[in-house]
Length: 157
Ligand code: HEM
Image (cartoon, rainbow, N blue to C red; front, side, top):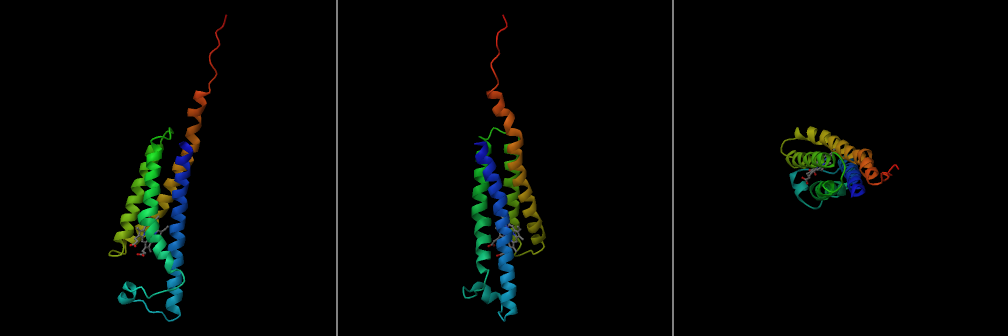
């Protein structure tokens, strides 16, 4: 289970990278579309007619942010209880809390753009926490296994 925990932790870190890539793809696509004459206003945002290279990035970011990452993070938390690694639950909880804050900021930043600053920076905290969770599983897991393979004491005659 330690390996599952470790893999899930690195998957979370990878998904944060996907989030960054998706939103950058969408933003550059939007800029290029506007430079080529596209017009974005409230009506255009609410319609399904706006289409440009990278528009899927917004959809991917929303779907991964609201669903995929929270699900993987919950699996990480569940696996942490069985990982038998010092600090596994602690680091999984840090990832859970950081994700909750990150998603909340993403949902609220539309109405309060300054929260976008915390949302962008928070992604790096989440990435770092997930990497730490994965790395610590490797560093502290070994002794637990070693203990079970300790040679039996040989009676001295
Ligand atoms: C990696 C750096 C990240 C950047 C630069 C970033 C940037 C953004 C931006 C610009 C938006 C507004 C886009 C829109 O409303 O369609 C947004 C929304 C959002 N982001 Fe991120 N984000 C990042 C990482 C993350 C991560 C790691 C998560 C989840 C754990 C996340 C979850 C969300 C959510 C839930 C929304 C709201 C989506 C919606 O309203 O449809 N973001 N983000």
